[in-house]
Structures are given as C-alpha cells and as structure tokens.
Length: 285
Image 1: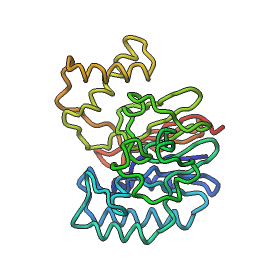
Image 2: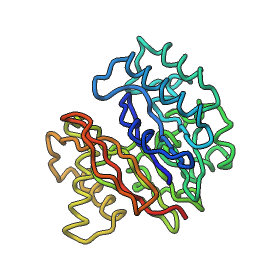
Image 3: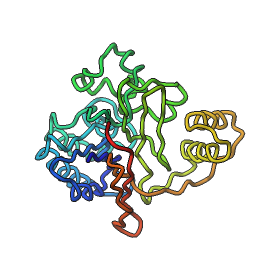
C-alpha cells in the first residue's frame, strides 16, 4: 500500500500513518514541514520534524520526503511567506542534519510525487530533463526563477496557463490549499491535489478559496468538467462580476491518501478541532 501525506506545517497527524504502515508500505510526504499556520511553537515544529526525519532516515527505502517552498527558503536565497527569521538558523540546521534525505521528487509505481507538480514548461525553460531536478541547486526552484517551479506552481497556474504535466505519470502534489479533492487533466496525464485546508485554519476573503467554491458549483449546477469549471471561475474573478465571501471556513487537515482503493479508513478525531482524513485515490498501475 502507498500513502501520500499532505503539507505538514508543524502538525503531527502523520504519526497516524506511521502506526498504520507495514514494512513493505511506501509513504511519501509532499513537503512544507515548518512555518505553522496553527500557532504551533518553534520547538514543537522542530521536535516534530526531527522525529519525522529520523523515521524516514531509519526507513529510507520506504519513507520518502519531498522539499516544499517553505523548506527551501531556509536553504537558499529565496525568502517568502511564513519565513521564521528569528528561528531560521535552527530550521536550517535541522535540514542540514539530513542532507541528501529530502528530494525534489520521487517516482513510484507510475506516480510522480512532488510538492507542487512538475510541468514540461519548467523543464524546457531551464533545458533540463526530469532526472536532473534532484541534482541542481535549490536556488533554481525559487520564485525568482518563475512561479511554475515544482515547489511554487499553483492549481490556477496549471489551469490558466494550460501547463503540460511531465508525460508518463500520475502526479500527486500538495501546496495549493483546496476544499475538495481536485485532479487536473491534460491528455493522458493528471495532477492530483491533496492539500486540504488545515483544521482551524481560516482563510479570510481569499481569491483562491472563492474560485474553488465557484468551481464546484459550476460542476454540480452546469455540468462542466473540472478544468472548464476552474477556468470559468477564474474568468469571473478577473471580470470582477462576482462578490467573494468574506470568510472561507476551513475543512479538515491535509489528508493521508492511500493507493489501495479497497481500504479506506474513517476520519479520526485527534482533538475537538483537528481531524485525520484518509481518502482512496485508486490503485497503483
């Protein structure tokens, strides 16, 4: 069985999959281990990361960690949102302790796993092959190199720019906060987004939040495909003809996804306001 874990941001819900994992199971984390959105203190963030990284190091053949944009900013010159200036040295030291353990992407059973997704346009812009992404400097993935990098490209970039997923894979990504499961399709390739809003994380008047709600409304009411509905929702925002909600209330934490469609575990409550969600995404091919 394969598990895919959404953005962590200091939370420890990943320990549930640790308890479930069998020796032959593979677990993939899509990155963003720091920069809490839930008020988690720096020491708790550090302890959580060290425990996770130790587990991955002890099980390197089956537990896999990807870099996220909130990770590389402590390892290169690109500083962005959530950067913890006061504790940056501690976080950098934590990452340096596990040099070589965290990768930009993994390939497993037909899946290509990364933080935000890998499009052919990014590879072409740097004249790179997919195989070279784990070998080049992290500075090449920062915002200065373009917002379609594998740690920065957003769901709306995929749709608005009609980006092309690297051929031959089903991609699993986090990064873009979403309310409901969403898959971007182009040709035979797909990109599955798994970063559900964290419990207790309220988005105030977010453009992306409105777009996702509007997208699902268009799918249900007008019968549009996901890609067409997403493009239509963004077009409405650009035209300024739609009033966005003032507050978008959060839904459960980032999910743990299993590739075994026959085994779906119900939601478990870790506390009154935090839930564990596990959803099947279909069998590995």
